[in-house]
Length: 453
Image 1 (tube, rainbow, N blue to C red):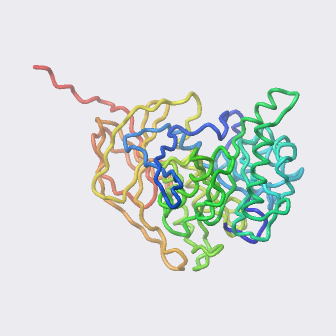
Image 2 (cartoon, rainbow, N blue to C red):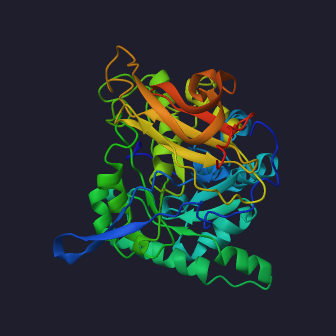
Image 3 (cartoon, helix red, strand yellow):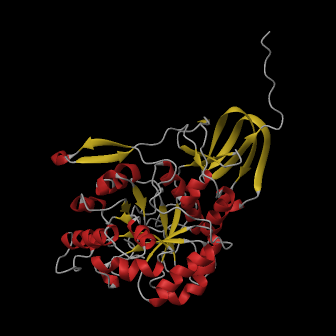
């Protein structure tokens, strides 16, 4: 969507080689729950149900849901800049596309040096045919790849054809052939065969959510969407339009967002006809985007993008880092918790005082709870060159029992606590339009239990 006339938009701080064992097929702790409504022609369209507020999910499951789109295919010459940036950012998953020796070397190096796994976009514009996606695309990066995605936004590229067929027939044909190539792959090495067959096959993507109707029933394991908010709130039309659109694909099995983000060009046109917002606002939106999508059950959210082009959310053209970079890196530092899987226990918190304050409750393996909380307000008038908007809501966070609390503001204050309220049963918080994290541990001095007498 950001580059409709360009080639397909396909495409950590420390070395973490053994950090990641799960493939994209492993759905994060809270699986999408769907209900079915009937639309025109009696076509069932599943829509996402918001998880129960009392649901608690593993802290590391949130980190696992974070991804970033990277333009390795166009900017291989800038790999020496992009690679250490990805290492410092801390995100474990990237989405990119490309072909050739240098491209495959870089994908493998990102995995070997930083533990980063790659969702590969497969598109005829990169020289692939459906049957050759495994031999030409997957096998050269088998240790690093975690899934393959179908053709990118052909619905707005009417001139494109595959095997003599244009949209949507050409895309459907390519996708069917790729699905067969992955799921029917054979090899003398049984381990290699099993690894290829287990790779998730992700649907093609559309720029216009209405165009997904033309791909209903396409063969895939999980649906992809490009849910750009157009400079508006991160969840703009997410529940009402983008998710129902994507869930028509793959029989409602699940959804990932392989592109969505913000442009910092402060004009009404912004980048690709989407109004730009300030760097400060996009730092707020980046974290809120990840949490809003996680809250609604999106399995992974790849923010667009890290590449030093006009659409870069994280880097300026000279390679210096924008506020969104520090915001995401700080949040990963605070919430990552790799290791034995956590079975979170229910922890009911209530937020009173404002209807537009959102929250998500996470738990780490050490037993601590982390409440992410933010005000869902506009942070910048998109497309204008004027002013950031700062919004704060006064709310009370009521806990199920007395806990020891520490407050962080990772968006701009990093990993340093900004408040230590101590042992409390409730907190009065001034919640801004940026993500705050409240760490809750068992109280240092447990409250006395009334005697039976």
